[in-house]
Image 1 (tube, rainbow, N blue to C red):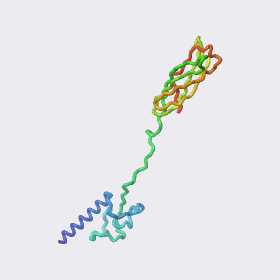
Image 2 (tube, rainbow, N blue to C red):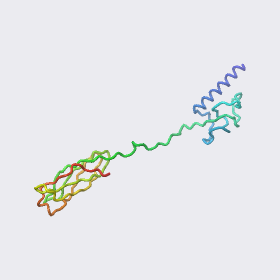
Image 3 (cartoon, rainbow, N blue to C red):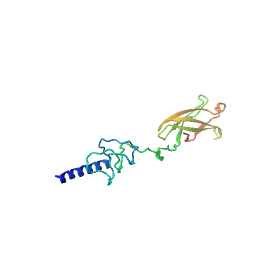
Image 4 (cartoon, rainbow, N blue to C red):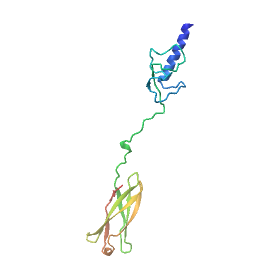
Length: 178
């Protein structure tokens, strides 16, 4: 009968040790500031010769062994990675839709944004006469939605020269600013 009782006690101690080491709680809660050696009372990590294995209850005093408090809700703090940083914007495209004239002194340009976020683009237009001479240059900025397009109406650089204006040339590259 004594052998059976000792086996049960040994089994109970081993089960409690396994449960404690794997982080399961026996119903006793310890402050997270009580890590290490000392008055953990009842918890059990490593065995010590000063521990009393002959009783099934703890005296609540210093056992001389180590205690371990498992924190199942502990998560590490995430850190910023290079993938979280914004990628540089790609330049857009600009297409001339209508050149300025005496009747309507505005040039219309369609700008496309190839980026996955809204961006600001600079558009450049050259106003030329019949010989190809650039009478004036103009630039303007337009905000374009992500993967979208926007129409920009630019005032002619010099309305006095509109009677000599033959054509407009738009720089097909719309420079991304932000």
